[in-house]
Amino acid sequence: MPHFPSLSTGATCQYPLRRRTAQRTIRTEALDGSILRMYDAGSASTVWELRYSGLTDEEWAAIEMLFHDVEGRLKTFTFLDPLENLLAWTDDPSAAVWNVDPLLSIAAGRPDPFGGANAFSIVNAGQAEQRFQQTVDAPGSLHYCYSLYVRSSQATTAELSLSTASTVITRSYPTSSGWDRLHLSGNLNASENQIRCGLTIPPGGSLDIFGPQLEAQPNPSEYKSNRSQTGIHSRARFLDDRLSVVQTGVNQCSATIRLYSADQG
Image (tube, rainbow, N blue to C red):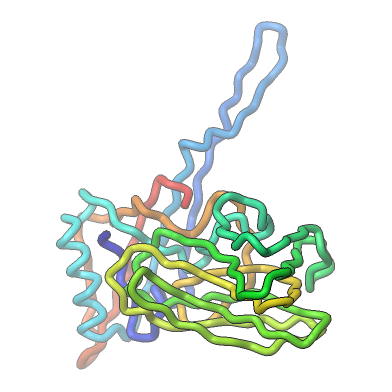
């Protein structure tokens, strides 16, 4: 799977960046004067303008190599939107995208740390560890940050994991009665094109969870709630026929790159 490369910092872009999303509503007027409006989901498109400065020659070469591999605007590649959550149905633990071990019981509609009711509780009634996880189609060679808010009325632990079929990284945290935002960051350096984000609950453990989020960068940003749409754009393209770069110094490059995607993530 060709994908847009990350920088040496682990992020996929520099800030500020611009993103423009276009959507369309179909308007139908009947003979009796009534009007029906419907959202045209197939018409949505997104354009990103990525402005880079101080790129190393190696970082620029990686972008240029992708441009040549996909033959400019001709072929598609995967772009992970730095402004979005890569996980789906983040406030709905009953959605099919979540893989829930059989001894876990989950209840939604719990109070969340921002005054809403979008948290959910997870209770492990078994005598073995149980996992709550989601798998996304994203390249295993990039740097990711998996984060979520956790609290517990009893002393227990929460273990976060990022994994592919061949490698895994984990980190275990003690929990408290107040909301803590836990995060796991790292590069799996894997060739697979699927990433699994997991939360392991110990035997007898009970946790309140809010805001699971996956991002292609070293640190977590503000939580973004998702339903079916995510920040994974598997049919992105370069918007221009050529790339232009300015050499501002030794091993220092500046460039503006525009990307386009007709899928919604």
